[in-house]
Amino acid sequence: MIDNPKAGMSPFSFKPYVEQEGEEYMNEAQLKHFETILNNWKVELMKEVDRTVHHMQDDAANFPDPNDRATQESEFSLELRARDRERKLIKKIDEALKEIESGSYGFCESCGIEIGIRRLEARPTATLCIDCKTLDEIREKQMG
Image (cartoon, rainbow, N blue to C red; front, side):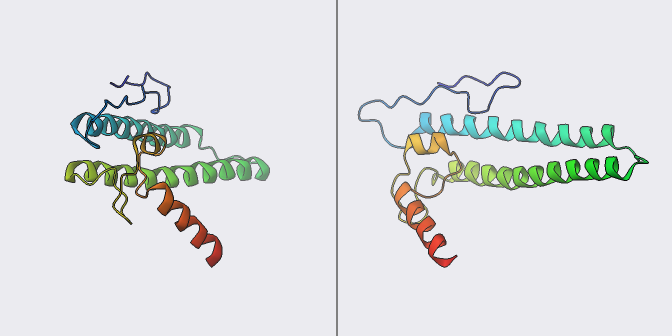
């Protein structure tokens, strides 16, 4: 069903789910497929957090040159912002894993229809079907 990603590979290195004719949407096999994808993604993000901590500890230096110090601070700032985005993503992954447990995963939180296997493989934390997401984006553009 799913290949576990090898070290350094993307958590999205998996075999796409092959639906069987007449198969019920979000059955046990599909839920397991997405649970594995989400858990692999979370593990990779957590590894990045650890790498950042070690990198910042190892590379932290008190440079006498103000330009070198500014460069280091800028690099650290960019890394911390990236980790903050990843922290928020980990929270979304945890929410998706809870939805799998509760049985609501894979259904649009706005209209209740199926989000779809391929959309979820592309974005496993998706909570809206493509139509509701499109409407949501149009509203965002109109509101500014």
